[in-house]
Amino acid sequence: MAKYIFVTGGVTSSLGKGIIAASLAKLLQARGFKVTIQKLDPYINVDPGTLNPYEHGECYVTNDGAETDLDLGHYERFLSTPTSQANNVTTGRIYQHVINNERAGVYLGKTVQVIPHITDEIKRRITLLATENDFDIVITEIGGTVGDIESLPYVESIRQLQWENGRENVLVVHLTLVPYLKAAKELKTKPTQHSVKLMNENGLAPDIIVCRTEEPINGDIKRKIALFCNVQVDSVVEAADAETIYDVPLHMMRENLDVICLEKLKLPLRHEPILDNWKAFLTKLKNPKHTITIGLVGKYVELQDAYKSILESFVHAGAVNECKVVIKNIQSEHITPENVKEKLSGLDGVLVAPGFGNRGIEGKIESIKYIRENKIPFFGICLGMQCCVIEYARNVLGFTTANSTEMDIHTAYPVIDLMEDQKNIIQMGGTMRLGSYDCEIEEGSKSYEAYGKKYISERHRHRWEFNNQYIEQFEKAGMDIVGKNPKTGLVEIVEIKDHPFFVGAQFHPELKSTVENPHPLFVAFVKAALENKK
Image (cartoon, rainbow, N blue to C red; front, side):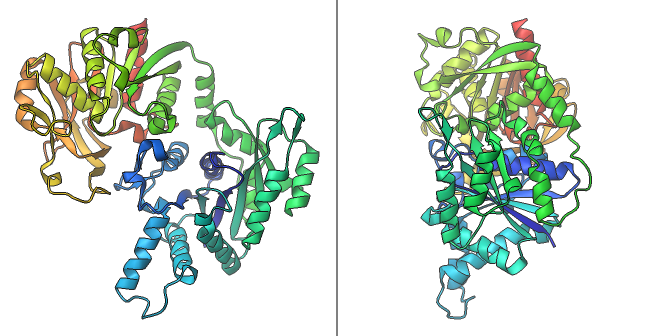
């Protein structure tokens, strides 16, 4: 039977439940256990696919085409193992399933209620991962904070699971805030006490309390929290602010979080965590020999979580190149032909980010024109790749009104067009080209050099594609189609040879970059930017 660890949050959101869950999973994995993490989100959206990035950050896509919470990106980056549809469940998905069952007569005329029908479905989703994949430990992060009205069914489901299986099989780790009041010059435990009290009122008690803090927590503070929150003193764990999120597993190891969990779950320690590769990565990350500045041109730059996977991919690729990558955010809406030189000055490379809709498009296209003409290393992802195609069509092929039909349905030169199987779709959620698709790369290209192989598989999330009717004209004019889907012939990668580095990818390479396996295109792009600076 699998063991279950639940990570809940209190006091405030954004404390880092996902990072704590991923760090604990990393330590348990490094001890030889087969571990996975899932995220339960209390919002009623069926998935994050229709959410604005300003609302919820980036939408992370798995190999099987699930549009999920960005925390799944942390899970994959830390564990180097892929997640799936089953790793992210929302309240919307839970209720949708239960209502569909009710319509189909599954409940035989019974009154459908939160308890037991909703909580039973939550428990089924929690245990599904373990039963289908033979995991030793399943870590489940509960979104939001304890006390939120939408979180109540999840708290009740955990209580039921613990009652049904025993506390040696179901463990609750509660992440809370211990704020430091500068005026009083002391740490305050009262928010933690109130958070645990709220949890107790709903029939659940934490087994371990992890305290997020800006200042070190001494023994007296730990004893006070233990006394008032009814946990053992060694079950109060400090989670101080870290230099980088990749330090957190080592911080948690020093606090014995993995040891405490294994002892409470009555599992053997096996051996010390094997983290040689992780530590080597951190050494390179913290001791760079070079520094480069990369411009990130996008329309969601005000919220860093909107491009979370891209930013982390630069961290991974920077470490490989022993190079610190400084990101300069550039709002594409503010770029004009008059100021583009000023906006892009001092950059060693530019990444044009993915996105949807017309806002900021002309700024992206203007940026790419300047980048191409001035031989600045360029990397375009998804819409960024489509923009470089539009720019090339306008300024090299002479199709001055070229565009994507997403932006201009009546364009005379639809070099980017809606996929045929997308044209009659009305439902917006979960209907794009999603998940992993194959790509065949042309030998001799920069992409082939980066990957070191001809056949790859990458994750997608888009509706519009390169219009294959224009392939011959583009290639004659100097833009090479170096990557195609071998089954459909859809264009995956474009390059310009007479350029230090000019690569546009229709897929999202950032979704597959991890600490131990940095993405080859990001590694190659950072290397090109470094060479450009030299």
